[in-house]
Image 1 (spheres, one colour):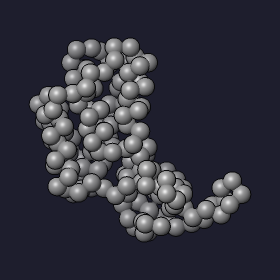
Image 2 (spheres, one colour):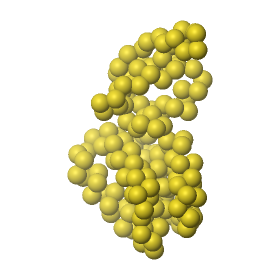
Image 3 (tube, helix red, strand yellow):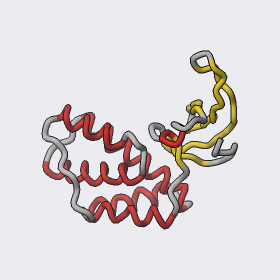
Image 4 (cartoon, helix red, strand yellow):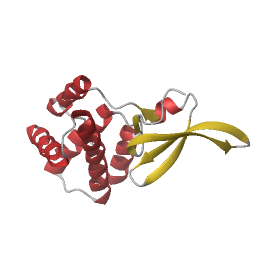
Length: 159
């Protein structure tokens, strides 16, 4: 087990959380060590095996976080005009939960929104990516919500 109780972690689907306990769960008839992670009002058990590295990660360092802001200055990847293909693109790009993927999705959806109207899925993925980024931003830089939102807004305007 690489994480300890009290560690702040980023879950690939649920975002910022904290390891609150180390536990064992019976999974497929085997006692499996798990991290118990509290994400807002949700508690999840993440098996502490080799695949936990793809589900959990430590928060990005300040230095690395600042480098990722460059993604907002880079030329984006076009999103499909077809809403179902676009949804699939967004799901695939956010699957790894990396901050770079999240920033890329925000950049590309912002660019898409300038040319086309968002549908419910587009709006859902934009909000999800924005919330994931802002939660980690507030933790890493110890800034309030309003400040992180304002700074992200500035980055998205640059595009």
